[in-house]
Length: 340
Ligand SMILES: [Zn+2]
View 1 (spheres, helix red, strand yellow):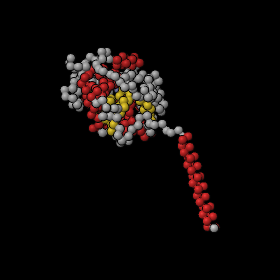
View 2 (cartoon, protein in one colour):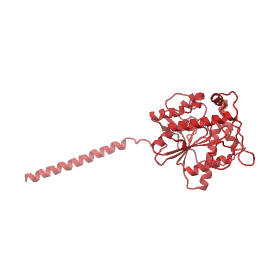
View 3 (cartoon, rainbow, N blue to C red):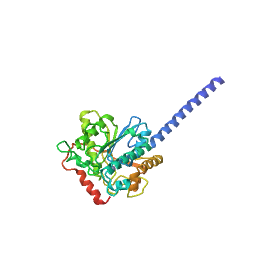
View 4 (cartoon, helix red, strand yellow):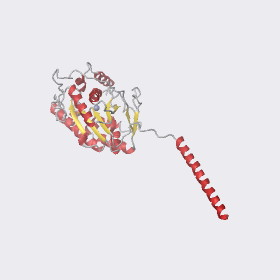
């Protein structure tokens, strides 16, 4: 009898404990439900991420996305950078780097190669090997002319007043006989997109006040249109960055970079990517590898080594080049009037 009642007590105790455990679990669940879940990362990267960055000049990719590049690599993703120009026409910097008062074509070309080497060193710091970089060698300071006047074979190709070249100097081109014509540049970019099949594409905003940056948007949007016409199922996350916009980026020394106040945040609002302390340090280290630009405007580059990076997502573009008058010229004029 005693044994049976002990068993009953034990059974009751076990039942009570199980019930209690149930209540505790329920409370835990409640507590979890009350706590707001952390917001999803604005630009999630993973092992299958294929990040393709279009940079008008060597340094724009690090300025805009030196942190995101590290995060993509860390996650096991693949990164590729395409430089539309080698940044060879920055006369004040050519004078300083080549030690000549009146640089000639060869000085501009040598300076362009120096900037390509600096880009390789910088990207190595971010964990991206030289084989992931493509230098298209189009004319620095001339991309906007290729969108309109120098579009097709109807006239002779554009000739850079700096390097004196009419075609890319080194053959990193995908298309044979590429010359400084807009349709050649669109075709090169379309070939790269179709081949790499990026899951995320970074490209400057059309409002960027440097004409080469603005023109890069138009060329990439035009090329993306060509790719989707041939591969209707191809999808990618098209993301914008901005580098030159009035005094944005260097008007304060806040640890966080805030989006420019008067710009449209895009279809999904500003995408603010937070960086860890280590990522900020590595980004600064990478920026400092771009030695020619550090010497002439280190203050500008350092302004982007902050605790976040700012992106936006545009409406699906409907760009068809050529266009009659390049809107990018007007933006460039505004920038010069503003004095930087
Ligand atoms: Zn640039």
